[in-house]
Length: 282
Image (cartoon, rainbow, N blue to C red; front, side):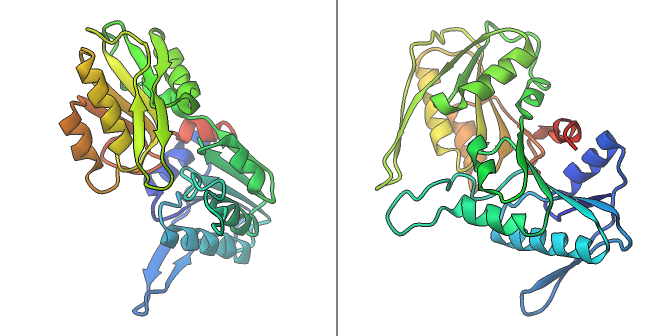
């Protein structure tokens, strides 16, 4: 049975439809003191807990769901993380800092037998879990909403680390070239500098592809460079559309025609679902 977290209800419903598993009705309740509780169907056998950990509260809810399904009799628990929070904190960047993704992975491991996580920041994050954990690549779904009439399309990633995602989208679309920006981050100030590649952009439709858009600052800077170099239309695609604060406004002001994302984080731009890719691995 698919057991949804409150932040992943649409994803869980789609996963149930794709996998043929039943969808459990879960209740979520808040207490006046700020604590919360969940209630799952009783008499479970196999439970697939689906929860994007988009906040600290969502992390706590996931642990509660895992414990609840065990209490309900589940002999096997599979945890699906459409989006894993803290995944970008995959090392201690300064002395005295935690490796937060490792801490979260260890906590999640205590209540599950297996983990699937969609396009983590680095696949190596799966090694932090104490149970078998696998990355699921859902980037190919981002090609679905793209128009067939893109003009000499260029699929561009904001840095070399996301080139594989851009290549996956290009391959799924069926044509175009791939390139990337050089991105340098100053960890003391947090400033990011984007240096354009040598790719020709003039009169081309450009699809900027990344695993996640958080604040949109780096992405909007990259799009600004494309405009200076004569790109025609610019689209932005990402697996995880966090789009915090005024990210969408930044992108629109930079000249982005449309933002596409999956439903790993459920937003207005979640035009396609990552659930089919996960269903294949259940």
